[in-house]
Length: 167
Image (cartoon, rainbow, N blue to C red; front, side, top):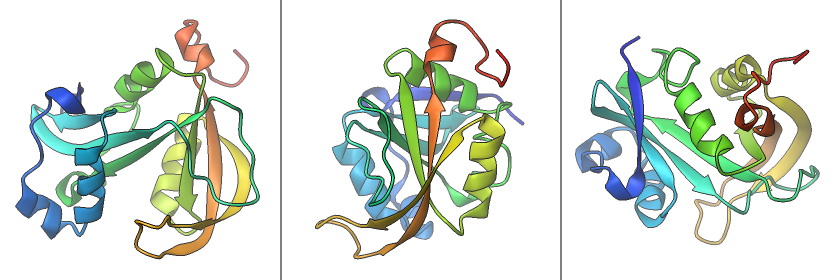
């Protein structure tokens, strides 16, 4: 796995629009462009994806989470998927440090059939909070369905502990 880096969205050059359209994520990149908080994920200085921060998590109905939690939507260009970019050997330690310096908890909401992302959350040590029914907002694409909601406790990382079970 080549080294990964992250850069604040405000200081990062955008991904090429053709790459976004080719990945069917134009709506996500529009959101990245409108969001003042987040990061561009790079591999060997090449933009590979983005993480968009939401201070008001959208978890759907049926699951509660700690007050003050944030949500980080992560997305990679197709050519970088399946290469460990979001793993412990990739950008995850940088994303975790960036989040832990600012917040206590990160909430992740994943479609119940998105097995790859669910595996990533388990590997990172997230705790499952439950299943919700999520509906996109008024500016969304009209999608809705059941999601899995997971929580990561960032306080352990900020305090210098590993955050692993038993610490």
